[in-house]
Image (cartoon, rainbow, N blue to C red):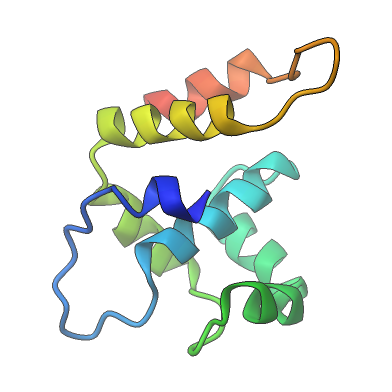
Length: 113
């Protein structure tokens, strides 16, 4: 997942940037898959699991706040993000049936935002 999303351009100014773009995307995807739907809930959900994510992603500054998620995703070009997201989904190994269940309404809602 990180290798695919590393190809996205990070439009943020380097001054004051504490969190890597790929870390924010990975954490967001985890939270959204688990049912969180806005940045406040994503940040709260991640904060409850901070030890896991700090170890997984080697987060030097802990879990980003909701405002950080908002600022980051405002700067990501939606079309390019969806291209990388689709690339990531296609890279997921599937079982014998070759199917992955994805909630189309949730994906469309994310794309609309």
